[in-house]
Image (tube, rainbow, N blue to C red; front, side):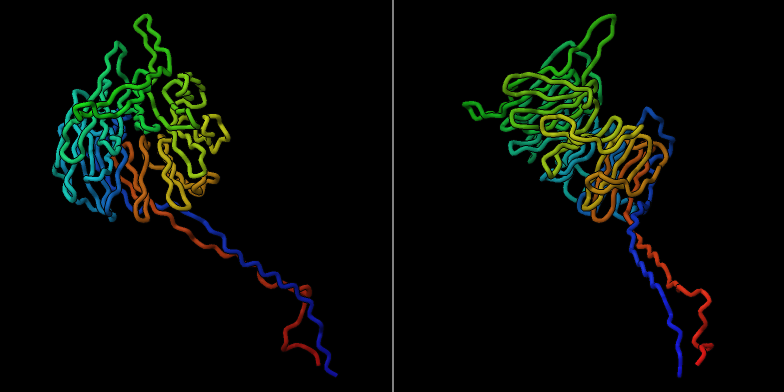
Length: 390
């Protein structure tokens, strides 16, 4: 009789595929020869359009790169760039100091240019009636995008000193156009044509979001940092001192310190993403804080969403990859100096410009890691088949 030992074997097979995202630098191109001081931060974010990256520097150079990091063109302007290049129907619009230039498609030549008496301080705002340009001296131009002709303009005058070099992106609220200014005021403009068919932009509402204190040659200012339509009848704002909401129906202004120096962005689920000083928050449409997403000892300068991911940039030079809802950090890279502007996404890569003037391309690499627990036996002294006794 052949007796075969009963082999008691526990087969523990755990083959887990653990996804590990890594944030990698595809390439980095330094654009300056001199060391960039803390006082010369690069505020203008890059623009990605048709496979090209447009980069505008504070020294007045506009440079264009391909996706491989090779330079495709350069033009030098007399002024400097603080406002990022923007894409409009007619091409790429760049704002060099006090002049806006619409570049011809496929080149860096001007299609038209229009100048104000002081620097452009907000991203150009495209609406059906034309392009709105906002200048530092409390002036708004409405420009025809076809030829750059100024269709209408408005300037208000006051004794308040002008302060910051970049203000909120204007927004549309119902049939009004809303602008924030460097004295803490928010204007609602109405566009119309008069009885002779001439374009007009008229101030419809005006709100003061903070009290300007004057005394002993000291003034406190409330630059409007961000604007966003909120709940019905409400506009959310963030400025250099606090933030809050404006009740458009009765003019009531509610302020809260939670919204100090934050950028406001509407999310797909109807809530509001607020990021900037000390981290990122989720707000309800009425401006109340729903939850804190993450905290940061630095200033969060940009959140770029792309598919399942979001790239977060900070002024201390930390660049982080998150899930798109910012619920979990996946990877972090630290670069020299900081990032004072947001990045952009284009065809499989994130692009950003550091304060030092280096253009970076970042990619996301997902590596699969297999973890296996090999077969284990309950009889450690079990003999091999060749030594089995018959």
